[in-house]
Length: 256
Image (cartoon, rainbow, N blue to C red; front, side, top):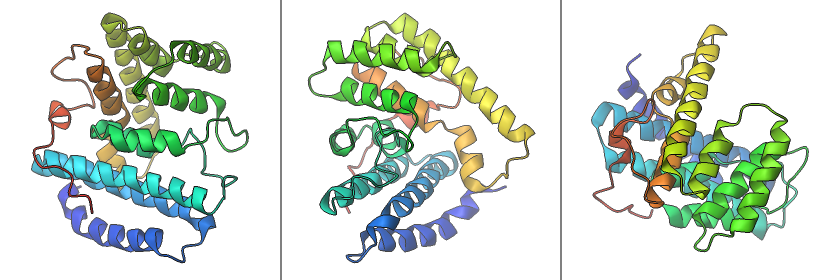
């Protein structure tokens, strides 16, 4: 599979889905699915331009577009007072993580502010909610240590003894503990590798988004960006997290 061959058809798809998302008469009930699909396609393009062209700006710009698709959805739900929509959950983190991976912490904070602050049973898993709220607190201009501790305790209770590499990663960041972060992050990468292995074993279709995301772990890169903001010394290279993806943008996002 030649990933670069998929950039042109993906560009057409993105234009189509973008028009549907921003249409003035867009049905609020369908905006969640539109934003999710658009965000997924933009993340795929981001990874492909990074892998095939070494284009850091293109990578970051498309991640920011993915984040803003989520931000647009959340704004739309508030404006339409559709706060009961299925996708209106803190735990839908793909857009937020895209923003963090691109170092667009303004968009990340906007998504956090627009996301519901209460767990929505039946629409998200409680551990995903705790993960989201912990991340939101970590990037807030003023962190609340008591809230962070309470969220981590609630999250641990949700896991009921199951392994929790994400929890340990965020605990290490909150505790300003770089050594624990490295151990926990390696455990998260191990989990990622095992999941990829399981997906291959069950015959997951190797479509462009799947192939791209097996090579570049946006969530992992987002966590590395957050750890970097806390001054953690990072390794030059991590599995599934190429160092090129951690280079800063040279040209600012055009803001379209």
